[in-house]
Structures are given as C-alpha cells and as structure tokens.
Amino acid sequence: MTEANGTAREAHPGTIDAAAAPALGGGAARPVTLQPAGWPVPKGYANGMAAEGRIVVTGGVVGWDAEGRFPESFVDQARQTFENIRAILAEAGAGPEHLVRLTWYVTDVEDYIADPRALGAAYRAVFGRHFPAMAVVQVVRLVERAAKVEIEATAVVG
Image 1: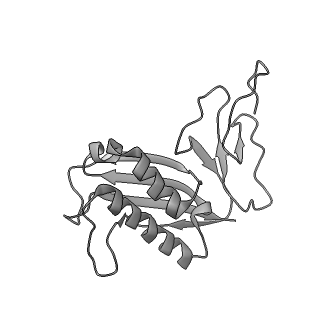
Image 2: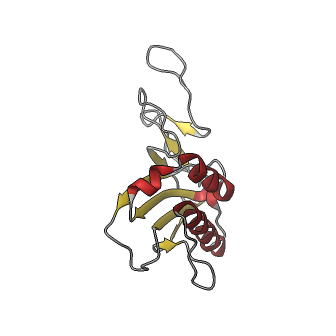
C-alpha cells in the first residue's frame, strides 16, 4: 500500500484502503481488512472489516471446558474461549478466517494486558494470523463467577 505522498507502508494481507474500497459484490469468500490511508497499522486487530455472505453470531462465550470447568489463568481461559468460538463457528461451516469482529468483556483489563506474548500465542494457536475488528471492555463481573473473559464473535461466510 502507498501513502498519498507515494511512500510505501506496511499493511495486513487482504488490507484495502477504506477510501479505495470497491463494492464487495460477487460474494467475497473472505472478509477484507479496512485500513484508512495514513493511519498506523494496528497490531493484533483491524480497524474495520468488510464482508458479504451469511452472518454467524455467537453469544457471549466463556473459557470453560465441556464439563463446565474454568482454567485458573486469564490466558488459559482466553485460549479455551477461542477454542469454544472455533467450535461454534464450525457448526455453521465457518472458521476463524471468517471472523469480522470480536468483542471481549474482561473482569480486569490488567489481566488482559499483563502478558501480551502469551495471549497472542494462544490467539494465533487457535485462530491463526487472522485479526478482525476487536474491542475490549472491562466489566464488574460476568454471569459465570469464575469467568475472567467472555467474547462475542461475529463471522461472515461468503
């Protein structure tokens, strides 16, 4: 991608400038990252996504296993949450590459930022290097008392 002054700038694969974004028409198979010209490229998320197709939405997904047990650490709960989201997406014939948005609810934002390397590794192990639009919100508590993180996911299958 190039800036208005002609200098190159790094972009995520599949990134397009919002101003230069063509209509998606034709049932794009994968979401496209939107990166406004001149903005810094975010790390680990996208500023926006565009997609056409069937929408898949999860409820708030927490990091418990099939028996309702939660791991102790934030990163381990996040990884289990990612795995649970991936399982829900698979039920709809979707995968992590179809994600367009993740909204995180965390009980302590300090837990979220405490170990970015481990959290990023857990994310990539389950979702790969696909980074949709994301928001992180700190809440007083979640319905499941042992939960430290709950994530809502939106995917679009072309």
